[in-house]
Image 1: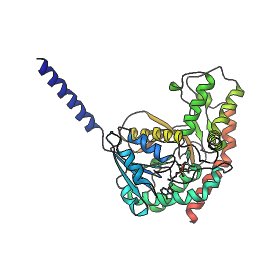
Image 2: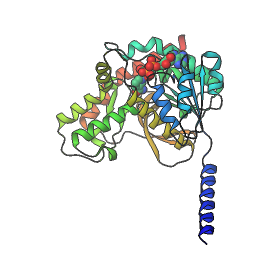
Image 3: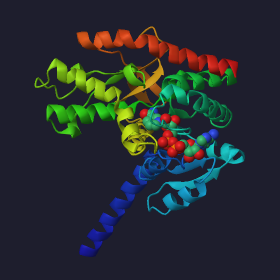
Image 4: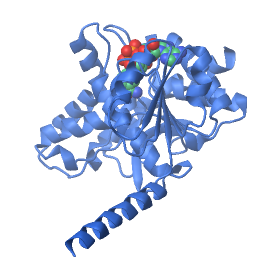
Length: 340
Ligand code: NAI
């Protein structure tokens, strides 16, 4: 009887495993810029994600090494490395989610806007290839300045006739990750349960954390505390750039944030309900054509762009004062894509 019991348990486990496998579709994730400071730890984290069945690592150089290294990890995702232009098509073919951390990072003294010219060109080229080889993929844009690279991507897709506003995302998750960490530290609450929406854009004052909506709520924080937390969240990128003193910008925390957002996209595609993350998307939440806010993710990408909810007087002021800069970054992206 004990042998029978063991066999039955074994069978049940097998049933469970095959049912789980059947319920979970194959998903291909491509990372463009996979050999970089963000790309490598992001490749590692996506290799650990059980929802990924195929992981495609593309860069202009260095991907064979990164792919060989990551591929030895004993998780299911099948890893392949692709290098240089002539392998980009194969890297993208059949991708469900394309994550783009390709480009140059900020150095001390550089603003996100200084990066514009180089990264704008890189993003334009990569999006042209996406439109051709995997037009239905969800695109997670990490390359900065996100406030401009997302509008560039939208223009490229529009020109190619493949634009679907539900499938284009600026990854602002690092702002949320930072806001959660800084808030938990200041309010002295366990960080694990903390939630803070961050809206607006993804550079300096365009980043607007809504601490008035943070959960768990804290009445231990003064107005001055909230102002300081807002400033620290807005300047989080600069804090890392200065600490790295010439060796680039946030890579490890960004890889974590990119992996969180990529996972949310996969869960949405797979039909998991109530997946909500903040992201910079085409939006009617304000008068600006693109705006970051909470977004519900589903089988086709964005299922719902969620409104701002109630704002404090300080946040309302922040919202009004970010609009000018954000709109000009958006317009700069659109103009670049239309002219070049
Ligand atoms: P990195 O220089 O370490 O890596 C960039 C990688 O992109 C390199 O491996 C490079 O070979 C590759 N690359 C360049 N041109 C390419 C092309 N045409 N196709 C494919 N790959 C290409 O830079 P890092 O630190 O990984 O940063 C990457 C980007 O992410 C930068 O634009 C940076 O500003 C941005 N970033 C975004 C954040 C966000 O919150 N959204 C946070 C931190 C950085």
